[in-house]
Length: 169
Image (cartoon, rainbow, N blue to C red; front, side, top):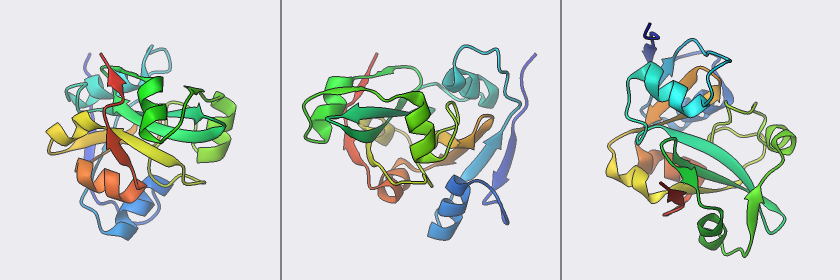
């Protein structure tokens, strides 16, 4: 049975830190919500399926440790993060996935709901170059079962992202 998504244009009042940041910036966006299935093996693939959107347009937010500093990589859910490319994009030498507890504590979001927007502590961000091939992309809006759709240029501007080829597959 297909999951239903609800769409909202720029919701008022409340929201997540990500949607609050988008509203405050005056950026056009759409919120998609769906019923999250805790047994689904992939948060990102679940979001793409629930929204009926190509996995190439749904991006996951991954936190890595690059030479001792946390860095956010935003890549399509259809692929994986190339840690060496991420390190290179921020002028680093080595990268490894960050400890999930540290990523949650630093961003203020839970795993599977980490948004590149509205993080508790703004981290250096790298957006995969493939995002620019789409008019809009979807990223987590700050909790499982909630995605936000926006222009990739707006995403890069609001996060201060470097745009570089950091995805594999």
